[in-house]
Image 1 (tube, helix red, strand yellow):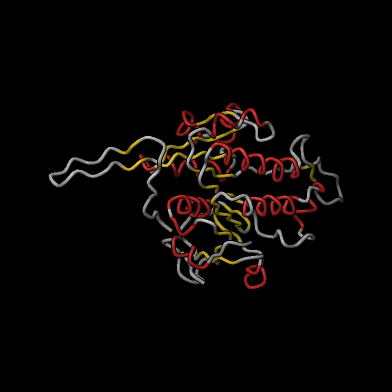
Image 2 (cartoon, helix red, strand yellow; image 1 turned 45 degrees about the horizontal axis):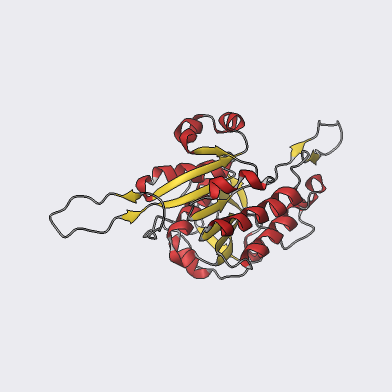
Length: 287
């Protein structure tokens, strides 16, 4: 398998603001248009990293982050909030009317929304138990919410949808499905299959367990249908490495119409992945 990240050559977008060419004594160059991207779930731990990365890329992107509540996003994002506040807009993926305006004029959509379980009060002698808040069940968020985003993105003329899901969706008995009786992985996979059949260009990224380690320190490996579990066990991947993969997917033609699992080998195993773009050569169109 190929392993590996860094930005590649950007698409020329038909929308967004132009990047002014540098003055030169040579012939004039045609301005490159910024890629106009909407990131949903931007208040989450991975979503905010993707939004930060888009901001750090400067004029290459025109980014907007969708959050349910700016007040709540400020609490979650902490110091990150000040960097991206001007880019945030409020919207609810369960309410179609709040999504139409944020999707207008966008070239790409990055879906990072996910149902989030809450822990019940602990009971001595019993294992922890979880629940989902009303309106926040996986069927509502990870299936209907994702489908709504895909449908409205297509309606708005979005050309590329990047969906970040999770490894483990081939196993109905996966412990994540048992949390709050939500079957979260089952509904995530349903949305992924819907996206593949929707007709819009897609990139589906299913990471292993997310962690907060520094990026670029471990070798990244891709696979399909949870085969990486068999070879490497459960595995983890730093959120910032996932953000790197998302960024490369947005800017790399070979990432179009690809779906794959991804994890990071333990530090010391293999060679740290410096460039994720070659990873897309080892991926295909199906889950």
